[in-house]
Length: 468
Image (cartoon, rainbow, N blue to C red; front, top):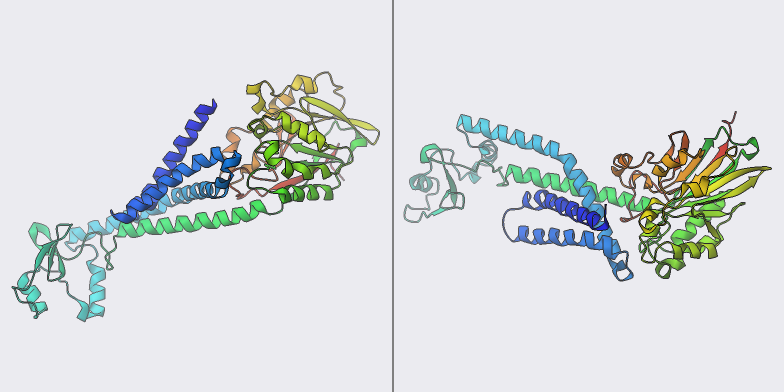
């Protein structure tokens, strides 16, 4: 899909979602008038803000849009989720209302009369409406202070008659009757009540979920300890440990402390190898260079290594400037190449391939260059940003691939959609005989929200058999 096609698809989706939100949150909950017009324009403005934020937040001049824009995108998404979930109970409630109205009409009793009867019986002095035909004479009888001359008759916007302040609804055959078919005792339409209740429930659910998600996204990553059995692994390599981190996403919503915290947590693991598997940044070195500088303090026995993710190819100057920047920070890029990790008198091949996002610029993954001609008696660990790259890695006999990209879904229920594109969403899986570990990532992209997929740094230990 071309960039133009992708942008068009995003704009189309955002437009459809906002139209649905307008139908459920504005049109269904308000009567025609000023309030509805104002809220309609608010929805239109938010519909424009969403795509503008996705584009402008990547530029330095548009960073001020990041917080309000991404917060609304998260709110929009969870409003959509909750409203869709509420469609079934909402439909059931409307069916019940229609059934009540239909039965009432068959008995000749206008809907809502029963509630008003109960209120009238409890406070008879407030009763001013009659369930029988209402005439000027009967009104004068109820209210002696009104003479026939003083009783005014007016038409309401529903075709009702207002006689001396009493609303009269024509019954069958033109006989006035009391109340509107949709009015409750308080005068609020049952359908309006149902719509407003659903809107309030969706709003409360969305804001509560987002509040929890922001706290999770901005909090400390979870340390996941994982053991992986590689049957072909030389026993002398047993216990070799990798600190795996991905999707740090340095950008307008992160600061230097975000990077410092990740480095501090990685160093506390005392790993043999640090693997940074892509999507480190969302901007240029000029914009985000200071945020990456704490990476120079990464500590490990055999070094820190990096492979590109798709977001490195989205930066204005491309990934090459970041590759050079990381070299200066002491993190070695593996651009379609491999190195030997000597440990305990044995050797493991550590390889890395570029992300598939580089194909368009001629800088895509080259598995032959990274893995071809190696000694296949050795175990190989491959760094590749996207789990789907394991399909090709398996043809080269790779024992283990370390990946990121998915964020574990970041915001439920996206985790249910990811399997349509990627073979593993998070954790340890297998693709054609190659084991794949997918970390959820230590940062976030877009909204600073994580729901059901907390940020993660992984301590992964390889062995040739399960510990006894």
